[in-house]
Amino acid sequence: GTEEPWRPFNRSRVYMADLESTLHYSLRVELAAHTVIRGNALISLKKYISVLTKYFPGRPVVMNLLRSVDSWLQNQSGGEITYEALRKILDNSAQSPDTALPEGVRWVGCQGSQPHLRRFPCGMWTLFHVLTVQAKSTSTRGTDPKEVLSAMRNYVRSFFGCRPCAEHFENMARESMVEVDSTSSAVLWLWSRHNRVNNRIAGALSEDPNFPKIQWPSPEMCSACHTVRDNGDHKWNKEQVLPFLMSYFSSNRILTDYLE
Ligand code: FAD
Figure: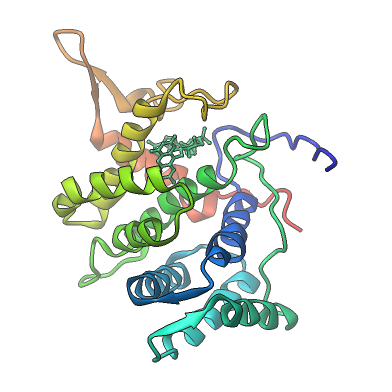
């Protein structure tokens, strides 16, 4: 195929084009690998769409699409659905003028220097961070602090195409997700597990040489996030990391460049 042109972007910002591309890929490519969705996978899908409907900070047309998929799914009381039926809902909804999910992907902040690098997995992490941050900034008393993390854990377990990734992630979740007792600790949990993954896979073939795996955010991005112990060891300053994440992934800082 023809090479897409490189889209210049700011490396320290989040782009709506990546989030919408992630939704497209997740709903139209990743889920399409499952002819029939039933049992735990169907529960995972319902919860995933319902969390997106609640917290995805999307354009009105995209939110309308998510709501229409959500209400269709919640009405499916049989034990299974076919992907074909779900695809029809996605296609039909997209026919009405005020409802849409862009066809195809347009990676910006998640562009890779080669076609097999970054892209969807990068978009998935970005989406999950945005959702935990949205849940913290909009949640009221009584909301389950693990709502977003549980939904993404189940999505990953049921559908994420990279099966070794899903297995690693499930192990981390089983090990320490119980400790999450507030929407703040959910934001920090996802950040610290993402750094563990960065640490584990730094230098692997899946690493884009132009986007090396680091313990994130770098001191250049947030110097106050980093402190040094008396013995010289590095220590995160979580009182600073939390507000940094809340601002970095906040809905009103998401850039809308390159949208259709
Ligand atoms: P990514 O790690 O995808 O990160 C995307 C962006 O998020 C970065 O560019 C940066 O801006 C920001 N970011 C980086 N670190 C953090 C952080 N700690 N907190 C908040 N934001 C951050 N690959 C494997 O090879 N093995 C695995 O086991 C594996 N498990 C995965 C599990 C999950 C749930 C997911 C979504 C992906 C997994 N991957 C795994 C893929 C891998 O983590 C990367 O997504 C992929 O290599 C692309 O890397 P990237 O450079 O685009 O940055």
